[in-house]
Length: 110
Length: 84
Image (tube, rainbow over the protein chains, first blue to last red):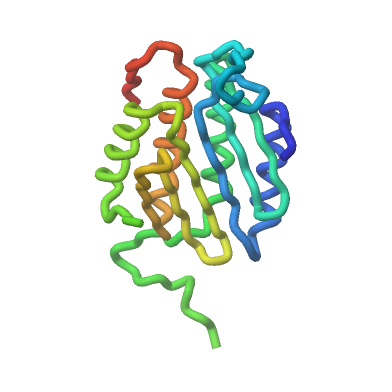
């Protein structure tokens, strides 16, 4: 799992989307992150991490390659704008709803 | 595993679930361009909410919900709801 900076994550995520256009899926996971870098200790050992409340973890994968990044309050605005644009730009393979004409594009020309 | 039929129900349930267990809940989005569909799942490993779609109009909704949850996660004050 590669932990990247926000910008690098966005670049790599773009590459994942481009790679998966013909086959495969892109999975993106979002989770609140409290800043711990070590596994949860077994009982008897004191927790030695400082709890942070303002971060979230983003992971992405195409099944083979895995990338991740941590976003905190300071970066979230900028990151979210770039991220939304990215999603909207790449998730364009879905059906568009047209009420009047029935899908002209998908009719195969013989 | 139940797939919600309407986006509104899913979005409401997802936000509610996150607010009850912010540290446990994770959001997963899976996009398949070759099949032309998109799925979103919100779970706290006990309850699982899912929504799937093949409509382009849902991309914006999913992306907005994702952004909303992201902002909730990084905000320090609990219960701070932003109106979009």
